[in-house]
Image (cartoon, rainbow, N blue to C red; front, side):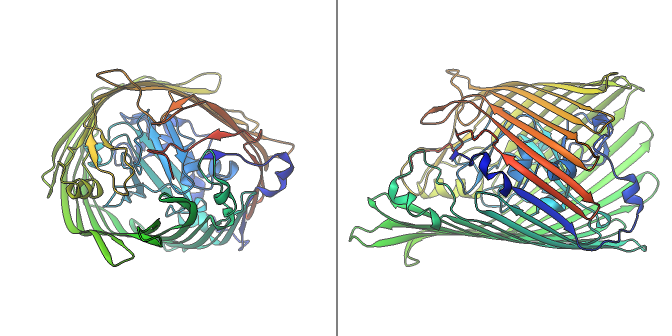
Length: 638
């Protein structure tokens, strides 16, 4: 889409306000132990890369973090915004969905199925497209997020399917952070409005929880096409997106019950391909939910048992208008429904101080997977109903060889009802050179099995089922805490991809899939950060990534080769008032139709923590009113 924010005259209409309705805050142990943004990156506790909590410096794989403080100060209002902070990730949008490219890999028509998304460890990729929704229809409102962890690279040795290019884990806040009533209001000059209301409690006995309701509305959405026809411009007021969300969490000691649901309605005017002089509304309705129960139990001093059970649901309906041969306007109805349950049993065993074993079994049972594609709900085109199940067995061993050397090894075996058999090994080495400097080397493989939509579409066209995508990644990382206060890090990686599933470029409503050529991907990611005693903080990241086909060295589409990201937060004349600047720059990138030029975008915001119960963020996004092209289409839209 062409992104163009209005000029500086509109500076008064981008704001985010968070008001805590209850003035009394109950101090808690969690508050006293709460990690601050000044914590050295190697000492921050993470759980995504190893599937259990440890210091980031002890993990064989790198984990990047975005904190709740960064979410607030930089007014990050969606998962798209949050993910764009991480090194090596590029987000594009067609105004309806956000598309994620990681380390130079992003396919047209892909719904982020090559990254695994978790909410407090609960798998939320659906069982039809394996999609990870990252737009305004994401389950969790930003006010509920404690931090987001991103572990890039091959993660199937622990997580199985979809942990192809990395794992993203969204960690929600505890009850002590949500104590009392809270309200968040957001508005901007793009006619986007958001209201979130939550209430949290924490009792001395250990019971804690929160409940949140939110509403997001976008009106007069800009059209994504480069040259939008005048007929559509006249109907901009009909281009709308509405989301309603419910989320809740309850904890008692090591027991957690969590649920979340989102309902979305999207309508967009479109020209009719059969008669471009006429238009009608493309409408989409989407409902997602999950309920999870997890519990940790200490069996003895060396052994802990972890149980995680979740059930999920997904329903998508689209109504696409077209001109029938007789001349009247009719609609394609595409109705998709999925229901599934996940179970994870994990045993953590520490037989000696130098050894840690993690053994687990997890599985997913797809109770329901159905596609119904028809005309006006009367004329059938496709009607498919199926189910599936998959199970995985994994083992990981962390061995502290010496005081300065640690070895991580493991593997996972996955088996599905659809005859997928995959073995995913991993091997990692951590060398703690000094207390301030470390080096790590890791190798791992990952896979992505064809999802239900890809399988059933090829079945409809009487084509062969695509094979599972496979990737092997070797990466090296160096991190250091310098004496002058800088924290720096560099990651170099090389990946080999086979059987990359890609959609054919066709004008039909259904598009079959095929296994593309082998791909070689190499890259380097560098990060640097510094905290000053006065409260200022600077973060920098630069990524150079190249993904090329083996046979002709041509570039994969939909990803820039270079990314540069910077953020700076500076207290002004008082500690609770910060000036925040962010810059995002991307090099040119190819699409199936064009080569789009590179661009740089700047955001400038003022954040004020008036008191513990009130914060205000005000500013400009896209400060210099930069126009750039953000949508990457598989084929031209009518």
